[in-house]
Image (tube, rainbow, N blue to C red; front, top):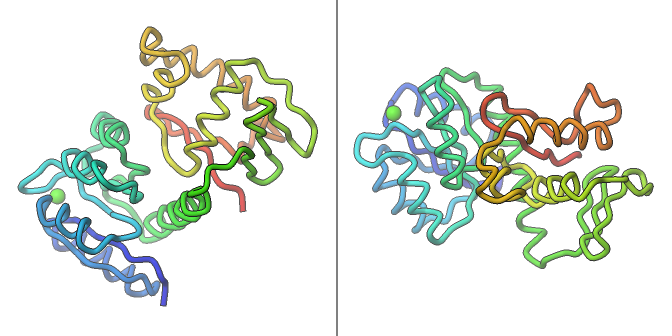
Length: 232
Ligand code: CA
């Protein structure tokens, strides 16, 4: 039996059935909720490992559900969005969601997102003791000395690239929005300056990704943001 307990929040029965059937077939344990207020209660009482949350719910907005759960819990939340616009996903990510799926999605996509989130969960759990060193595949960051290494060779990063790398590393597995990144790295004066972010990201990637045109570490989410992946 898969030890992960998933809370599925979806009012649309066919989609809910697709998800729960998939979870059952892959030995996940799960409970289902059909509205936002039940979801918040279930999240509190059952302490799930991962929440799959539809954004369009009959009572509470999904983003409001995220805000309430984030008052006490860091449980990874994958939102399910029916709308093709990015704005609702961005709002959900900024409210504290970790990842998103867009309807209609395939079973393979669902399982892939769950695997990424399980790796993030393992990281969160192993990082309960704050560590001065970050390690991910060939990448190592020594926060104390303020140096990053690739294959044990020091990377020559500008202060901006180093801050970007640290922010991504500290949120490994989570999709970070452009707004979140620019605010964290530059402060609100640069709020959502996606053009500058893209330039710094490109120079960071040239130093981090080998070869630079097939990124392994930093994943681009077009129109939304970036994510550092955990290398297995
Ligand atoms: Ca819905």
